[in-house]
Image 1: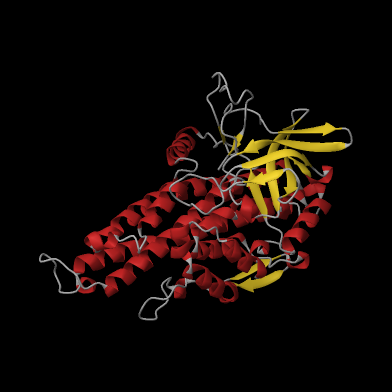
Image 2 (image 1 turned 90 degrees about the vertical axis):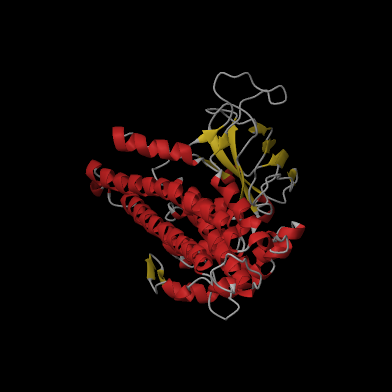
Length: 451
């Protein structure tokens, strides 16, 4: 993060970032170049963070600043209008944006998942079509989750032919980022029972987007209700669900971890600024001023170490995802004689390793960040609770993100793999337990895709 401390030092300790060149099929760009390009925008976004928290103003204008700089097209190859960065570099920037405004990272999470899926097929006409749109500034939002239904089930949302039209109908909840988007990715079962993604313009007739999310954190992530009433869908904008490879879904969880790394960075920097200004102390204190108190220094020193460690963990896992993604594309596009069972096994091993690393990171980063966003209050007594500081938002936001895909299940999967070699289920969904009668107001089963 590049928010400035009161003494003019860079709060995020930017010197720790290496000038690593990212080489893709489209050229190279360094970390330094990317940070110089986006940090001014991140700083500008960070300036209004407390006001947005107070008024619950969705940062739509701020999202526009990112769009103008090509943030949504970071992974798009250069020849298709993007920057061609690696996943590691994308996550470097997501951490910094998370420090400036964590809601924006969450809002763009499905956009980057959709972009990555198209990146994997960037040699195809469909892949090129959507990557060009994203390169031109298009943002893709999410409408996957439904409130009830069978944990193994289908969707209440339907996509059916009516005459010569293909019509979408249904209600989705937790539609993160929908209000920021140009297109909405809707998870749905077609009339023949096939699970697909239907992409519809967010401004299409029959689309209604609400900001009615009621969670106590991440309040401006635009995670509300989406209603689709006879929305006409272009048949070319219907994408079937292909086989999911290990690591492919893990990217969406890693986005949450990048956001958490940004949150704890911001929490540490704001708390340090509070301590520097603080004049009140205790008779039991070891120094006259809090900033000179060894125990206060220890609290912040430990918190700073957590912020750095969380970022490094995320970047290390992102680099593993890079290797797996590159290997999968190379194998898919290799001559037939090179696509051997042995080559497939090598790629699958990379993908599985990357996915397991995400789960390991999840259990570690979440624990560290939640403890740290609680412990920062030890430095200031009741003064640190002042609502004008909004230091509580860091714990609330972290707790909200930590509740996605609960850690207890990840830890069990890791243990099962360690003991029995059982590979994690990498396409989870949630809903009502199998065998339960459907709720009266929700007569059909519903799929709630991983959040």
